[in-house]
Length: 425
Image 1: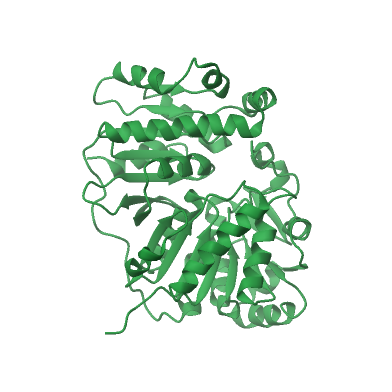
Image 2: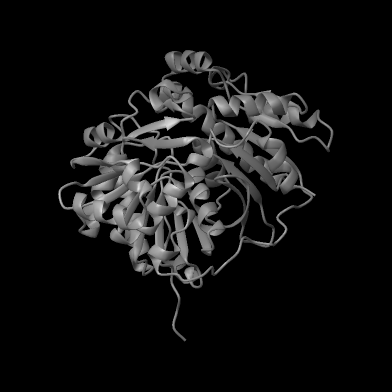
C-alpha cells in the first residue's frame, strides 16, 4: 500500500505561532500534526495520513545565524518527509526589528529550495492585522503607532514590510496592492507572475478574509510561501486537495485535573486578560528583579499555591506595564530579564506536572516555548479553536496534557476563562 506523506511542510518561528497556523489548517480541512523543536529522523513514520506538518521552532528573537541554521535543519527534515510545498510562518504583527532574522531566514529558504521569489503576507484581518500598500496595521493603527511599539523584545518602529525586508534581507521587495487582490484569482495571478520575474519578496495586501482566500488560491505559484496564519484559510486548491480530509476533532478535550494559567506576555491585550482574570481568581506576579534577588523562586510560588483551595484555578504572571518592563530591562538587561522569567516558568511547569497538573493555559510565545520545552512535549494533536488562531492542543500519550498556547495579542479579555471552560470538566 502506498504511503501517504504530508503535502505541506511548515516552519513556525515560535510555539504559539505554530499552533495558530495549525488551527487554521485543521479548520480548513487539512489533517495536521505539530512537532515542537527540531524533529528527529525517527519521527518520519508518524507523519503518514497527515496532509500538513508544522515544525515549531523557538527562533523569533535569536541571532540570525542560529535562526537560519535551525530553519534549514527543519527544512531538511521536511524534505525527507516528502513535503512538496513549504510555509514559513511568522507573526501577523511581524515581530521583528531592522536587525531581525525574518529576511535572512527567507533568503536561506529560497536559496536551499533554489527559488528566486516568495509571497509575503502577515495579514490576519479577523484579529485586526491588515496589510495596505505594503504597510502593516493593527486594529486600524500603523504598526509603529500601535501598542506593538512597546514590545519588550521586538519594538516595532516601522510599519513598512517592504522597507523592513530590504533592511534585513538581500533581496528586492514589491507591493501587490489590494486593488489587484480585490479583482480575484486571474488578475492576481497575472500580477504575481509578472512581479516574481524581477523581485524576491512579493508583499501582498490583504484587508479582508476574501483577500486571503484570493491569495491562497494562487499559492501554487510558489514552492515557498511566508506570512501569518491567515493565508492558510483554504490552501486545498493550491495543494491539489479536492475536498476536506479531516474535520475539526470531535473528541472531547476537557478533563478533570488541576489547572493553571501562566502568563509571560506583556502585550496590551494580555494585560487586559490578566486584569479580568484576577478580578475572579487568585494570582501571583513574578518580577525579574525579585527572581534575581532570590525573593521569588519556585519554592515561594509553590508555598503560595499550597495556601489555595484545591478548586482554585490560579494565575502566575509576569505580565507588566511597558514602564515596568523598561525598568527591569534597564537594571538587568533585556536578555537577563527574559531568561530569569522564562527559567522560572519552565521550573514551575515541570514541578506542577509532577504534582498532577494536566491543564495549562499559557500566554506569550516565549513563555509557551519555555513551558512546552520544560514538559518535553515533542508532538501534539490540534483540537477545536478557543479564539481565532488559538486552538486547544493535547499531547499524544496515555496521560495527556491539555494546553492553550496564546500569542500575546490574541483573544478577547475573557480568553483565560473561555479556555478553561473548554479545557476542564
